[in-house]
Length: 226
Length: 345
Image 1: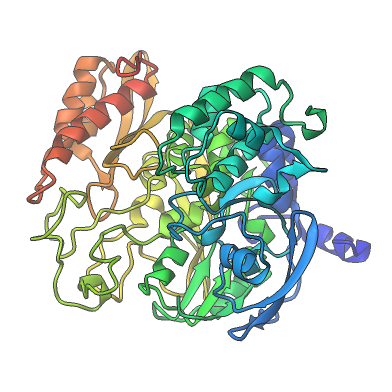
Image 2: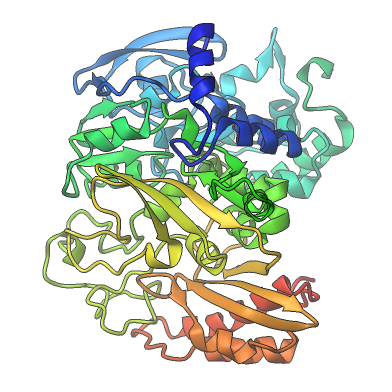
């Protein structure tokens, strides 16, 4: 796409339904009509042109391959087999141990990390699939020694017992406030429906959520904190 | 999980070229929420995993032009044609306001799936092509019909979450897709790419009850992939309603999706599709007939709900689903018609 010549060449070809039955122009039209966070987040990917080459795709693995991940703003390089999940790559290969391995089946939420700002289960994503994306773990929720408002509220309201689920909860909650800084407590609770606390500290978490929603206008903009 | 060779093709044609003509050796990877689970349990043991993450054009929603006609009627049809790429996430489907305006059945169904993390990962195509949730199928050590065995263990075993429309089926799974009933009610079709090119399949014809390891829950060949799903906005009233154990992050026990024209307070061209009650999404013909031409009221919706249970043959532990169907159909009809949701207090 950086190659201007190639772009023009493709533009001329782009006159009818293409690969997925969609033309680039139609996507532009829709994205203009749908001026929402969700639409803006997803539609640009669809604007990308088709690759002109029909050469076979390159085989990667099965032996370990070099992989560089953007973890909390730092480029980290390791070697992984294709079957290694993002969770295992972070914990076992890169020593980023904030995200926890509990169910390892995309159910409990302890492994939650943000990928390009969206909370996902790192146990259910191949590490190779996270290449080129911005990964944020619970370790990112501190800035210059000052704890982010979300984990700070967990501390203040004693919203953890054993603490094993907490890194997942704070990442999911941070992502929810990032998406909607004016979210209501009910909306934040809904955003945590993919996380489980087996100690059952839900009431303290609710207290933390209520305090965050009440006392932190503009919470989503981290610079404004404190 | 068994290790594999990973591919990240740039085009759908490259992806299809990597697939084999029989199931099991190569798998397409979209969101991975189903595939990785199956691999970790050694239910899926592919030698090749073909990631669709490099095919940018598979994600997103567009208003398409498929008629290829420049006249007014063609342009009008184009304006109301919605094409959704197969790799569009469930979160995007759930939140897109233009989709919600025309197809609340689809957006509600998408928003009801899993939790936020699952919806951020899971995709439209993956939801349609995912494997069933039967615990015998998902247990590595149970050699059931769908894994080359000669017996369905659910028929005489633990079957509380299984099919209640069991007629003629050797395997009593329920189709796991929650988007499918909504898409069938909305008369959607899927565009599919195979080695010989593209073909279009109505979603109503997309699913199939599997009975052996050589079959899946849908009719695609092993070397085909879903490119997109096409919907036409026709001003239909539509809704999806599901009954679950939990308020969130749970599979539906039953689901009803409905769509109909509603002019002069009369429901016309009614389509009612049930999810999670049969090996394929179940089109409830008798229920649609019961309310066709009538005003949607608590009484008529309730009668349609009762009609939806016609033909149910529950197993030893799931007769409760029969009652839930009647409730789900009634509530879906009332929601679609914009009636008061008396069950929400």
